[in-house]
Every structure is written in C-alpha cells, then in structure tokens.
Length: 139
Image (tube, rainbow, N blue to C red; front, top):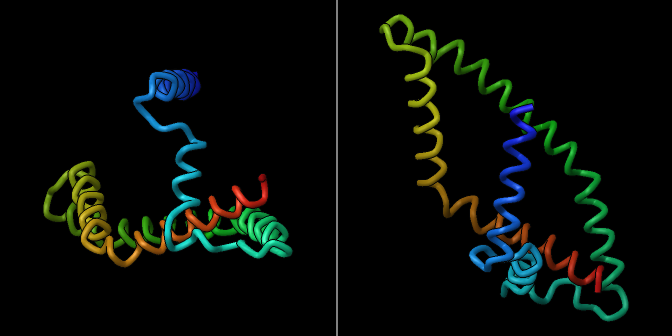
C-alpha cells in the first residue's frame, strides 16, 4: 500500500511540476529528441518513411520485454558473482553487508560515469531514433 501511495504522490508532484513549467512536458522532450541533428533525417522518405517508422516502433515494442529479461538475468548473475566474491571477502574482513553494498554501488556508478563517452551518445541516438519514429508515425 505504501508503494502505491508513493507512486501516486510522485505522479501528482510531477503533474504539478509540468503544469507550473518547472519541468518540460513529455511532448516537448520527445520533440527535442526527435529533432537532434544525428536523427533528424531518419524516416524522411515521403513514400516509405511512415511505414519504416511504424515498423521500427513495432520492433522496439516486441524487443523491449526480451531486452528487459536479459537485463534482469545479467543483474542476477552479477549479484551471484558479487555474493560469491566481494561480499565473502568483506565478511572475512569484518565489514557489514550494507557498507559493502554501498561501496559496490558507488564503484559501479563511478565506472559508468567515467565511461560516459562510450554509452551515452549511442543511448541518446537510440532514444532520438525512437522519438523520431514516434513523431513520424503519429503525424
């Protein structure tokens, strides 16, 4: 019940933030992503553009659960590896599990932050392509 209340409170708070203009609306965010220079010309063919955009969106919808399942499996394997190695060593040293978890999480965030140039441009290009396909197929 608490989770539902927190989600409801967050949704109401986000709605007020969008209404007050403090946060961009989802429509504005999609338009900005769709108009990024690297994806602006995609699906521009007057005859096939809308069809290609719709097929791309359909493919993304079909593949999203498979990718999500893959991410869950990778996270489960990573947790098993951490439990068998890092947590065992930290227990022998005498560190509490919560401190070890914070250290592992901080290390993972630090590595992701330091390697931003590897994954961020590709992620933004993919999001821009999805947004562009959405804009082309719905207009």
